[in-house]
Image (cartoon, rainbow, N blue to C red; front, side, top):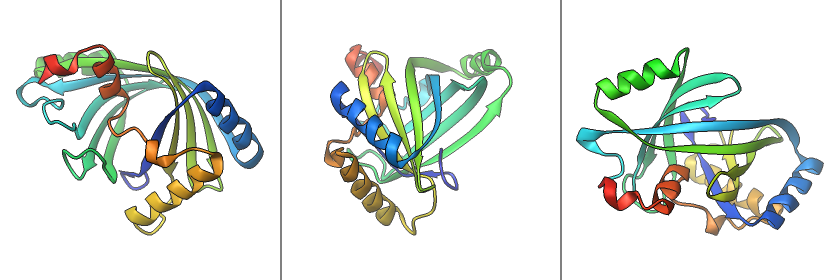
Length: 194
């Protein structure tokens, strides 16, 4: 969930015991929002593959969650670097995912991968949204995102890192590529897409 179309977050892979420990802590200090299953189908234009850069910085997906279908586009900054600071995030709800997939196909976009996850969402002081993700084929992750304006990207990243420490989550171990890249890499698809 982006704040003013800008998403500032960290996503840290964790083992199951830390995942459960963080869930227990959040149950005491944060507000539980929801428990959902999500499926995101990722696409790339054939004429300009989003996976061509060493560090992909764009993603286009059709998200299925809470009975809704959403087209989502993310553009990370700075571009083509291992560690990004934030991303522009634009999305709109659609009524027919199959119709949009047909449009994408007609426009020469191809489906890359589907990311399926079980997600538990908590909110801490209306400042951070914390998602506990169990991602099919990848394992457990803790995602912490600023959901209100914290003054600047730099300040938001600092506040997120400090909050992560209070949960026992090491922000320096944050994933730098995202679920679609990790899944494609695990399946051996990245080298074939460039």
